[in-house]
Length: 452
Image 1 (cartoon, one colour):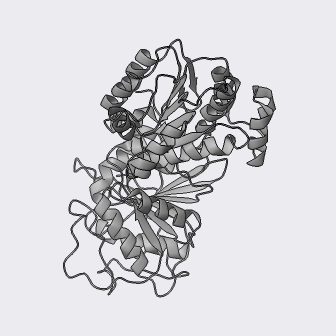
Image 2 (cartoon, rainbow, N blue to C red; image 1 turned 180 degrees about the horizontal axis):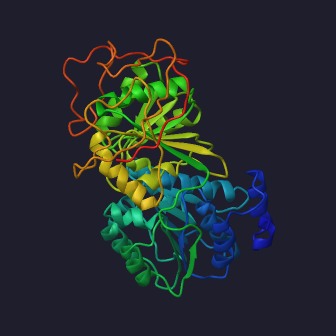
Image 3 (cartoon, rainbow, N blue to C red; image 1 turned 120 degrees about the vertical axis):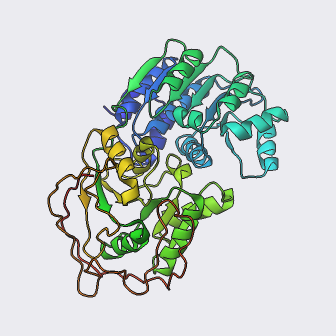
């Protein structure tokens, strides 16, 4: 089915063609007609399935159909959990509204209030905002939401997880009850269903992927390694497999900064992005990564649902997430738009239970490999948390070329521990100068599937 069959205007079809798209994704096929009919919507879709366009395109059409010569007022409001996602939605509105006389502004923290106030005073049709900053503007009476006709809550479950419900409640008090509401969420958890019951009127339910499923275009793999050698192994994989662009997730902000610095010392250009960075720093880091002036972007989960990077080939879980659902969101950054991607997890002994929880959530096995020269030394991975031994096949190692470490002995001279594990944010005492891994240090090979 082409976009021209969905009832969109010529101006929108032209903008879609400008981007090189010719056919809608499944969520777009279902959502666009429903929104154009005026229905409330409750939709769940995998990351990367085109859900932003699924509400942006019909929203623009409805606003144009109802446009008048009167002074501009906010007629559509999109709430997102993170600055990065707000920027992404704002860019989508600008892209698809390129041939329309509608105005949109983005409102989120980390930026000065004054430019946002000026934009609101000049008059806008669409506001894309994070709940906290929008609440600040409401409290200062900088924005009037009494004319909002359409409300979109994007990544609703994430907003609840981040504690934005009080801010959302404050915002809802300023909105007309007679409006069209769309709720997009990765999962239909209990809290989300409860929120939907309050906000939506006879909504159309759209679910194009089973809950907590992983895109079939993403190849998943794991490497068993001691926590103290994760950084070495990561540098080895990036260099030996010639990864040009890799998004790496850590559990802490300090860990992200440290890992980016260590990778740079290893000869792999890297930068970090997390909640303690200013918006300017985050924007610069993302821009550098997108244009591939840095090969590795090290991020915390603040970026797991907010980053939109075209054709991202590799995602690495340097630290496994504490919440297995975050694993799904992290690896959803790759394998988008019908392209293939790889998701690699570096798993130390202390994370064996988290790894098991991820596999249980996905109801599937993830191959666990051992790279020769990086074999786990601390304890046996074949011993589960209960202490009973599980027999498993002897690992087939990924063999390095000459010059790369081959034994189970001490780390090569010059290695630098990452400090992963219970004390991962404390630098190891007496660590030497980092070992520099260069391209071609190792061959790729087959691993073995291991059970914890």
